[in-house]
Image (cartoon, rainbow, N blue to C red):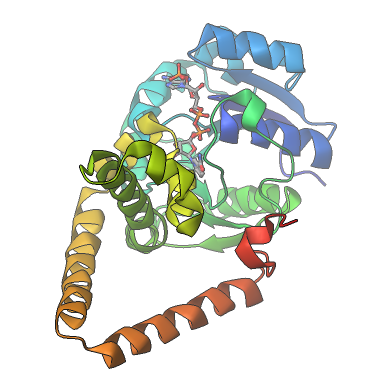
Length: 302
Ligand code: NAP
């Protein structure tokens, strides 16, 4: 039996449109409605026929839905929750896909008292945005982390778990605050570093920007993929996960100083030991099925 029969998706960009495509593929009888603040996105979703009904306002999309998934930037969750509150069906479950969870849990709880809220974060994505960037298999074999409040209805949690399992994800339940610390390390800090490296490279005086681009295969280009991610989404991530990011950044700065010192004092042993540990982490990610084993991320070399 399907966990939900009428699903509404608010925000039809990369993640929202991927959820729509994945639902169509895995649960074709589910009635899908959707809305987006951007009229060009709504038009594009109609052209691509990603949902059964695209509405101009978020409120209209959620009428009758038994699952509503907010797929907007984290900073917009509270506004959207307030907008849909008067239109929700009794018994509807509210979820989201935001990359930060403690703030979202608190925003949704404040705007939707008495409503079953099961926040979720599919740990899957790309550097692209918008409905054309989405695809049905985005969540397959990726983790989806649910962060319900302690007193959340366990039946609602199980239904949201069944939904993400049907989309191909492996589901884990975690406390929202802990999620934010884990993701600060595995996602938010790497994005911050990538944004910094790209900014540093473009500001260097002795190296021209055409040289940076020409010789980017030396490593730089792998950071540019992450640094090409959506500016609105990432602004909101850093502003809503401030404490965990600042704590992780402090640890990173200390570790960077250790490397700086090792280079200055010709301490090859320290460098070699740390680089050896990093290789093991890469191997573990491949062994866990979270990336390809093909060298250079599987890029073709003729
Ligand atoms: P996206 O491609 O930019 O799509 C977000 C869409 O939401 C945009 O079309 C945006 O319209 C719309 N929107 C913004 N405010 C709205 C509002 N108040 N009402 C209705 N629609 C609104 O972004 P995304 O990558 O799908 O990210 C969506 C969410 O998924 C974020 O919370 C993000 O943290 C999370 N997430 C992202 C990734 C990833 O890799 N990208 C992975 C996991 C989770 P405008 O363009 O007009 O603002």
